[in-house]
Image (cartoon, helix red, strand yellow):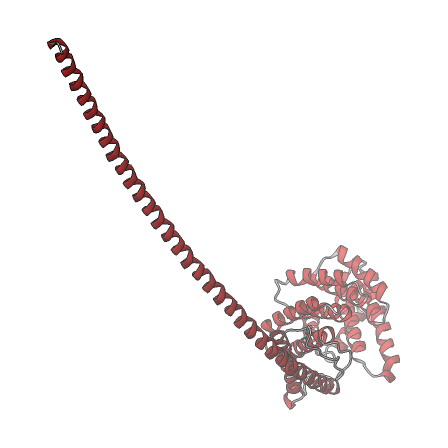
Amino acid sequence: MEVKKIHALYQLRRGDFQTPRNLLHSLAEKNDLVAITALGSLYLIRARLIKQEHEKPQREAYYKRAVELFQRALNLNPRNIWAANGITVALAETGRMQEANEGFWKILQNCPKPEFNINYAHTCALLGDYGNAIRFYEVASKKYQHRDYQIMEWIARVYYIIGKERKDLESLETALDWTQRALRLKPDHKIALHNLALLQQTRAQLIRDAKLGQSKVGQTAPITTASPNISLPELKKVIAWAQWSTKTFEEILKEEYKKVMFDRDLVKNRVAFGNSMIGSFEKKKKELEVIEEQKEVERTERKRVEEEKQRIEEQRVAEEAVLEEERRKRAAEEDRIRNERLQEYAAMQKILYAREEKSKRRRYSSDEEDRGMSSKKSRRGF
């Protein structure tokens, strides 16, 4: 019986919800704690699979039966954390989200397993407590060494909701980053590819609404050439995002994707919305190209005028430099001539001074001779 129980649990994990049911019932009648808890999980799964509105009473009956089984397991072992978790999951899935949130928090305090971090983060996200949702998703992702692509998708979903509600591009960028990380872990994951296309389209839509002044598909605000809200390179990047997302949605509509549970009508609407958005972007792109051409002409003219001014200024500076050099040479030549004349004058004065001295000496000698001859004559009796 123990081997059969292990095999039944294995079948449950593989997604076979029919084969192990009878065995689990027989084991539950013998008060087998694991079988009772597993059977409660099986009823939870069966309730979750019912989607049609007319089957709602059956769905509620399955949830009720699941809670009864989990409560029975708790009566057998009050510390059965999985039974407590099952009851709290049933509360969450039946819309009693605040009670479920409080229950998951109590479970998490007693047993901080990644699964309970995830359940608590789910309820936080649904209650609008996005900060705690991201925090506990990231705790679980870290415990799994960031190798669980599904947790990365849940984190991306919360950032996507924040970006949509608050029109926050940074949150959308973070959502894109987490989705790309999930795709790197599981490249063939078609839902992650769909989510990536949705994020790219939403990002393009947010930029369109913020910078092109559009609030509805196909409505474009008047575009002026004064000061565009978006640059041409940025617009080209946004067009690339919109084109890639639309092409991805078109791929999803192909036959190979029919096995994946996509809402094909919604995907078709996204293709139509993407094409309409690309049309408005292309219109804006043409007008921006005209503006850019005008600006280029203006830049070229300004550059030519500046170059002409610079050429004239350089020519003026060169001419002034030539004139200054000529003035300097002329001043130097005048100084040279003046110095030469001063030297000539000094030499001439020196010559004149020497002549005058010589003349004075001659007169002095002549006077001396005259006095000598006079004295001789007097002595001779003149």
